[in-house]
Image (cartoon, rainbow, N blue to C red; front, side, top):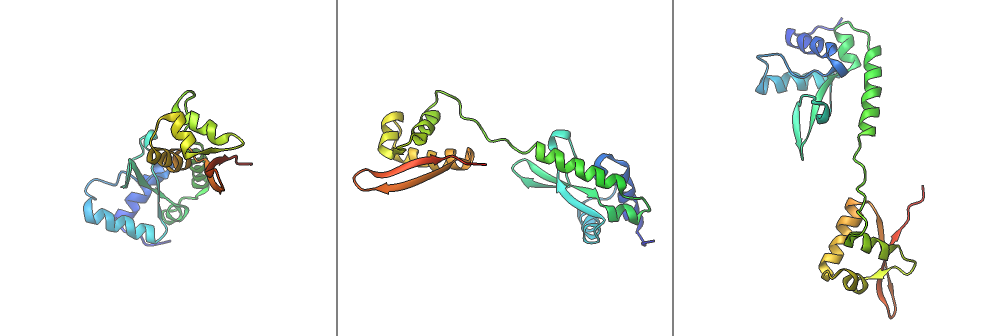
Length: 181
């Protein structure tokens, strides 16, 4: 059997009793640098693992990663074995956590019909595509706004593949390429 400190035993045992084997919150009196050192040591030994926290379910945070996201700490199979618990349940919970995180992955936004963005998408999906000038004429936007919409809203936010080809006499033509799965 592995030699654990009292703090390690308390953290691992408490985490083994919680749903999803979450080791947070840490015991009272374990905070600041001492908490960081204890948790990092257990992560190094493979007894704890840092995972994305599901804030919708109110999982406690170990640390914030920015943009309203954070991580929590869960007891691993090795951590359960260190305190004498067989990890069959841990594997099941890890599979459930993976399926939940995949199911709750952010969905791609859908443009509202009748908006200028929907109009631009329709122009770009036409067989001939559209030039910047055609999009300006249809929307009333300035050229920099059109370019920003093509690279930002359509490419990055909506995940559409926008291509451009330069034609003699017509200029640069933009098109949305349909993804085939």
